[in-house]
Image 1 (tube, helix red, strand yellow):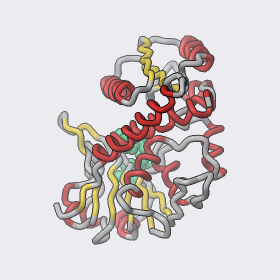
Image 2 (cartoon, helix red, strand yellow):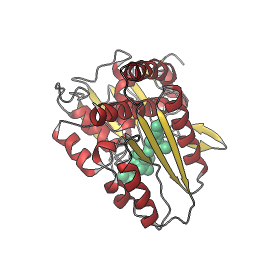
Image 3 (cartoon, protein in one colour):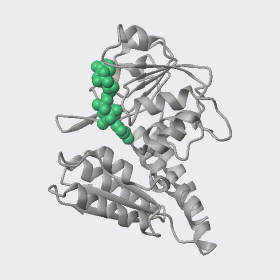
Image 4 (cartoon, helix red, strand yellow):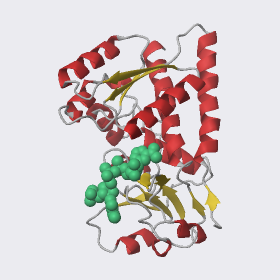
Length: 291
Ligand code: NAP
């Protein structure tokens, strides 16, 4: 591979140390640690791993962290009761409900139940509205992780042609919005880029991808982005996490590394950055709630 590696693991270490330093400074001035409550319903193995990683990252950075494990047959009412308690708990600054939820629970009702200032995933419609309006309370974690992975590696999306493959509410859509927005003091991660969002109905996906100076793969389809879809010298960010024969692989084929100027690996790229942005948002929530 000739492309530069956009190392999310290393950058995550740096940014988590920044968070830890701010948390320690708050402790020295007598403030309680930022606290994150994670709620896991059921026993989906992937979700258990995600929650465990988030819990450990919080502890390592000096944040309070609580994991609420609820059985798979939890009712929506029981989950909403727990969220109401967490909303009222002064030690809890951020609430994360791990998705997906079992069938009997409406995820939209749960997302709407989280207090907006504790919605550190930035899934609540009010927080999404603030993002759309260009003065976000929080940035959603995975899109923000992608943004930081770019800019902290000296790759400014401003003025560039960006193509994002995927239009989900969690990754593609908010990332496209962030990268297309004007960068202002209220919206420092506005990308000022020219953005195209591609999906399964896109005509000539390869041709659209070749227009990209920055190509973001968030399709959830293993190795769907091949070298012939990448313009020589483009930067490629791989958000995909797909289990193939027990191994974690991204959406980007290995051959892309011979064409692109930079590629983020899977694992070790966007994944650790997503968790880091959760810590950043939980710290910001504590600053808002406790001052
Ligand atoms: P999702 O909800 O399944 O959305 C996938 C999107 O990609 C859809 O918009 C779909 O188009 C599009 N798509 C799928 N296959 C395509 C193809 N062959 N050509 C063009 N478009 C295609 O997935 P998601 O939640 O956004 O997640 C995407 C991937 O990122 C998954 O692998 C997920 O595990 C990973 N992820 C990683 C992190 C991290 O921290 N590393 C965080 C979140 C997600 P349609 O809308 O037309 O169906």
